[in-house]
Image (cartoon, rainbow, N blue to C red; front, top):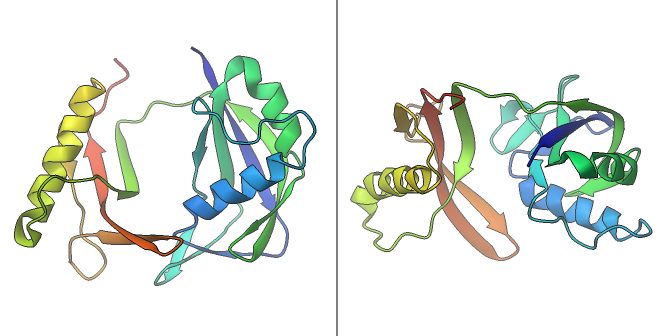
Length: 188
């Protein structure tokens, strides 16, 4: 299946978002879809949504800049529908209002290295001193299952030199994970 990426510029007066805004962005787009005639009521599995990149400014906050974009990947045959559904939509993300403007289409690009702000797994064993090892083993198993080959999977350090442990709040539940990086990826 061929995919395209739609990148929406961000309009509005909001210049700050929570760095933990992924679920809120998903919820805001889902709510916007419910207002659009003949649109799906949820984001289908084959449509992928990325959190908005920004510059960390303080604990748990990012500053949006001119290159910050809402990115959505979808099957190429659905790109026109998603482009029209979301163009110029106003979203409320944790009380911050943004408008999706100036969409542009891109081919997804391969990368030799990827970094995720937060990755979570449901681990069978949780022994706190051994948690990073179990976590990295789970990452490697997940990559193997998807037949993704990379030279190194690691948990980077945060600004204080500690392992980049992260938490995410979804309603009243706290989820623990780590920032993860993988290097040595290839297009094959």
